[in-house]
Length: 308
Image (cartoon, rainbow, N blue to C red; front, side):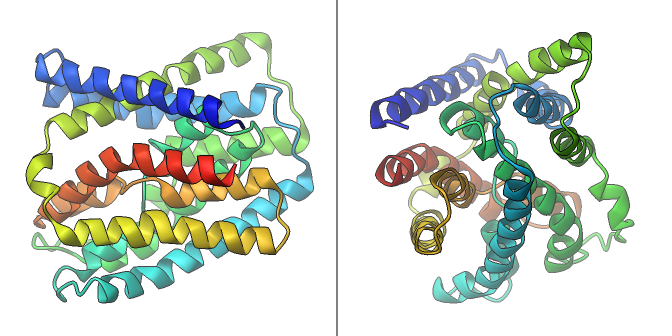
C-alpha cells in the first residue's frame, strides 16, 4: 500500500465524515434519525460488509491464516485487558473513573469504524483478522465489559450474556468464517444483495461519525489533558508496540497492518451506550469518543503510512 493511496483513501474518509458533520449542522440529520441510522449500520450494513468482504474474491488467505488470526485475536485482547488496569493508573485516574478508562482501553471502535476502514485502505486478506477481532469483541464486552462497568445506579440486573452475544454482527461474522473455511459459493441473488447492503456501510458509518462529532462539545473536550494522555498511550504507543513485536516474530505485513489498525481505532460507542442505560454519568466516555474519533483520522494515517 503506497503512501499516496493511503492518504487519498483517508481524505475520502475525512470528506465523508465532513458530510455527516454538515448534515447535522443543517438539521438534515437529527438525534432521532442518527439513532435509527446507527441501528441500520450496526445490525444490517456492517454485517453485510463482513460477508461481502469474504465473497469479494479478493481474499487469498488460507485456513492456517484463519487459525493465526484467532490466536492473534486472543493475544490482542489479553493484552488490552491487562492494559485496561495499567493505563488508568499511569494517567492517575481517580478510583471512581478507572472503570471507564478500562473500558475505553479494551473496547474501541473495531466494528463501526474498523471494518469499513479495513475494507477501504487495507489489503483484502486483512479483513479476516478484523472479523475475528470483532467476534472476540462481542464475546468479551457482554461478559468482561459488563463486569467491569458494574450494575450502575439503576441496579439493573445483568441479562444472560449469551443473549447479548448473539447479535446480527456476531452471527454474520461466524457465518462469514464458515463460508470462508468451506469455500461456499452463495447464489448470485444472495451474493449481489449482500454486496449492495455492504457497500452502503462506509458512507453511512463515516457520516454518522461526523454527526457524533458535530453534536459533542469537542472544543471543551480538547482541553482535557488526560484524554490526550490516553491518545498517546493507547492510540499511538500500543499500536507501535504491537507492530514491532509482530514484525520481530515474523508475521506477514497484512496481519501486522490489520492488527495495527485494530489497535489504533478510537473509543467505541458501546461502553457509553451501556453506561447510559444503567444511569451512569457518561461525560468522560462521550468526550473521549468525540476527541479520539476526530484525532484518529490523523493518527491512523500516520501509523499506517509509517509502517506500510
